[in-house]
Image (cartoon, helix red, strand yellow):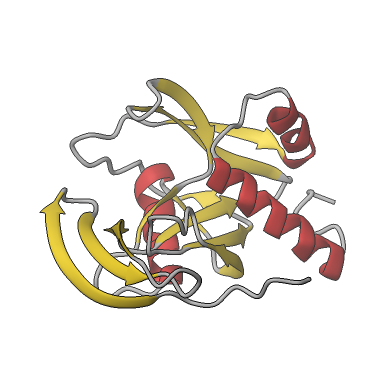
Length: 191
């Protein structure tokens, strides 16, 4: 017998702590299966973006930085939060310029994912930009220290396979980009 999942009914919500990049919220909801109440923590976060910057010769501009969550240095594409009043595309182009000093006039939205819908309420929007060129120096906020690497697009699958790229949202962006390439041909490979 097939079981159909139904939405839970939220009966109350109370504010929790504010942690600058997200706020905690406690929701009490009723299970449609058992009728029992349960309390859940939800992290309210702004939407995020990431952007795959492709140079005219088919290289991806990666950023390398230290990440405090897992205390490692990561290789990933530029990304960040969507500021109030910004569209995801505006945020992607802003983050690209701030983190890399690169700009481009051709940007495509690739897709969006829910980073972890178990407890986060936001989305991450992935973009690709073609013919990216460095036009200025990087602009860091007080906590950023970023190195740039231009890596051939063809090398990306092996970097994921060997564990050099582990950031799940970067991997999701390349998944969306590969789907885009299936529909539009081998764009962005410098040919």
